Length: 244
Length: 244
Image (cartoon, rainbow over all chains, first blue to last red; front, top):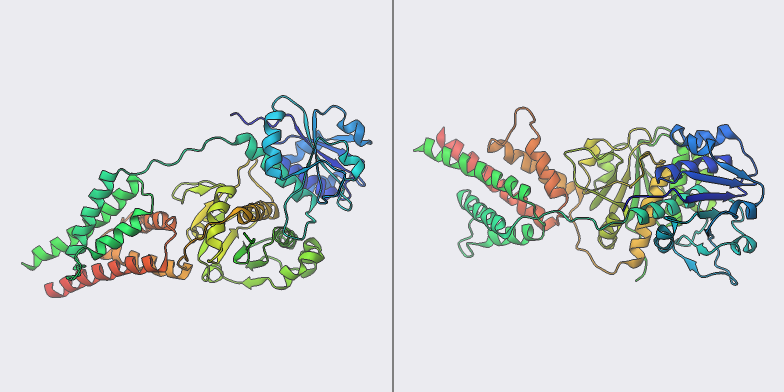
């Protein structure tokens, strides 16, 4: 699937700190989200925003839309997901970011989607959340107050992952034949260097099988191990001959 | 299952900005990670760190360990995962944060795990990455330079998610110190049997690190490999003496 995040917007409502707008822009840019809107920011200091956005994300800041009313800002969207740390009553059921992203990724291919974030102090109110089609809460271990730009990052990261999710290919492993060839070679080396337990001649090979058996070896690694065996055998044989 | 992140440390190497240490501490605290270590920070301005950490995460900053050498900082860990944006050659295969977290969550139940992050400018060098058992790259959409504290957040978030869903128990792994001892021993053996490439003297050691680094070695297996090294060295030396 081609990654298409063109319909996903990050909408920041009533932000206090310009630095958080900049850091959010950078996070969006990292994760392929190019649309940013701010609604009633307390301060809109471009230089402080741009400093945190870094040069790479400055185009997001330049093209950022500014609104003075949340309802107006959201009016053109087909789907709005609001983030909140609180899980009060009278609200929609809340999703985790991953679950939300998996729901929203296909929706976003043909619909305009807003990821909505509230202010640093008070988050989104019930009134704001009423405008949302989904509510998302980032799971935390007790201390639930996540920095605004960090929350933006987690949501954008999950959106990016969900939009790129494909069946990843596992590496190609060595064949059994290659493995057995390696074990024969190892066994020969163990003998050559005197690693033989008379009570239990295959003791070392046994250990090697147990260890290497669980390593999911690739052909290249088999060749590496056999290269070592070959070199040890060559060294030992060469020395024996010189001794004769 | 009870969420147990007590064995997971965030280790920040050569950070430039105290604010990033503070923001990382807050992110750790959000996600239930309570152990933080810094290695050779450029500046260690407590007030700037604490401002970003917020009051809730100040205990992480108070209990943060400070090291002057990365090897020393990592020596007691059983598993080190290094983060990098670059995907160069001659390295371990890289994981995504989710895949890594799912591997590491069970391991962390009985082993000390480090999530290692490099400096804001240059990240982790190849030399740093050689000390890692896994390499993790956060997926991005082109602009791959993620703010340090944002990277910490994504890794901690994934660890928290994975630890809340994990049930598997992992074996106890060897420490970094044991691993490094084994690599020294292997290097000695490679020399003894003439496995030295004059153009690139550490070529074989490099391959060994790449292969063994991903095998999640236990102490017993380290002893097995060192036993082999010892025996090869003994055989070769013994033959040399007889030749004289």
